[in-house]
Image (tube, rainbow, N blue to C red; front, top):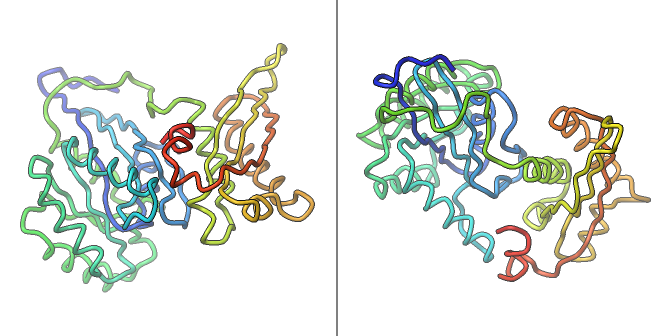
Length: 302
């Protein structure tokens, strides 16, 4: 990062809110420039507050990627909502996301109104997915979003996928940050551990193509990560944890075909991360109703 001088440098924390799947994790990854948050078309994909770090000439943004806000049905759901509340109370700016392709609805209005509870945070409205919307849709969305609150510091249309207007957003957010030195060293893109990042990659691979009832029931734990003596292969032993035997059967698939596909998808993303070829051993185990059990939640890191 080029140092603009300590007196002019800005740094601070930003988070994005919106209905599930409006593109929060995709936007985080696009701004950071590499994948730190998992993305999926399943709601509630993000489970932890993951920090992605964006270095700009004028300073540093730390993006906290949180789960989407939803009505909790389990203890896990409640803990995720509590995590969002805690993050929103601590950040310097909140970006409110609405996709250009969908009309603003009651869920959007509720979330926009809830930002009243965080008076210290600056607020920016972001219309996403402009690459797949018509000009009329984008215009309509900008007007709808603009009318949701009177205190937007900016309203910005962008496409994370097509890399359009990301610089505009990053620079705008930086102007809203307090002055101060960078919070993380140059070259750091996330404060997530390697183990956590690998577990998230495996969970993302497992989410692909499963039926709707399953995503909330999948957790991943890592037993061991070790590099072999010759250094050209990394062994990773991981568990996919589900709640019922029927779900275990879905994950494994016919003669293990689904589990093998999950392993192949995960390996392709883990190898660039660890810098070697990977031997990945996945074990599927059942922890009955883990989302409702405080002890199990604790063991699984929630």
